[in-house]
Length: 419
Image (cartoon, rainbow, N blue to C red; front, top):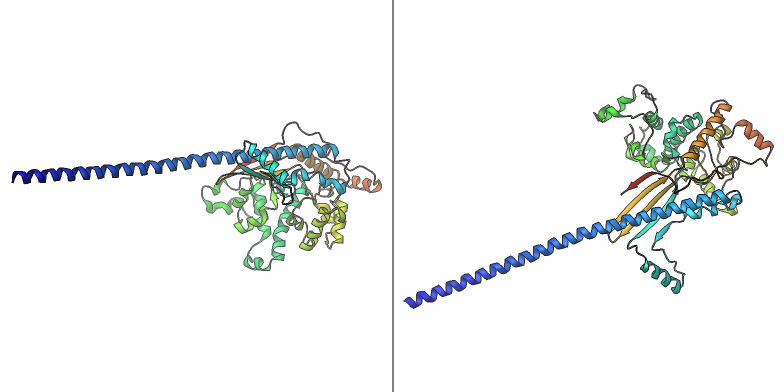
């Protein structure tokens, strides 16, 4: 009996030891899994942080290279612009218009020796990320802030151009027009003007504040009666719906050049000049300016409007005079640089703005308006006397900004956004 109790006690102790050993092993296994999971999470977080940093600096590298390309273009245009025939002037544009990426894309027809040489340089580089950059002409868009320009010509023309964008949409898209039958383009344009003008009376009648009263405390501060600082502010304008914003956003800017360059303006901006500039007419304009065999870039306003008339555009001389045009070099640019590292991506958008040249354009426009009756300044910024003189003397040299000394250092960035 005593021996039986001893045997049972020994078996109980062995069973407890086995359970304790199993529990300990399970606890250790749990710790290993938890530590492994935490370590993997920390590694992934840190790796993503490093890759985001790599992507950011890759995007910065693309931005810096784009600034260098713009500087080289402006220097070349400043020094060689007068020596290059107008038909060949766009050759210099390739300095900034050509998209660039790193690692460089190798054409299929490139030899294996050249491809291996490029791949070897990529491996030797310290940049463990990739980037791609694009540069766009920002000045060829319609400047919203010109709705409150001191120049009457620029102020009135800007309002008409924005109005034409919406009216053209309604005229060319019957389905959209039926879906927005209650839309009144002039009322929306008036609300945009009320956003930036100095008075508090609405151009649609009543007080500007009444259209923002439903926003409560935030609405009490609107409209701010100042210029637009970003395009996204346009979404806050009374009556501005998202679909209306999408129609306008790619045609307007807040960094314009107080004129529009037909050699770079988008098709939509060209259509806004007049309802007679249909898609077919605009297509011919774009083909002409892009092909030297068809005439190449437009030289001046006379050349442009003559071609418009030949292509079927019926723009009256009075309206031609009201649209400020420029045929000078591009000097306002929008840069978009996207950096990528592993699964992380960062984007930088910046705008280069030549304030001195913009101020010069506006000053010349105001001088011309003072010399003539209000609103009579020509489409090229010349006074009536200057235009008559130019007609009398075809060899008279046209005013240009190409010889204006360039400021030292990199181009001036006035807008910088990261995402």
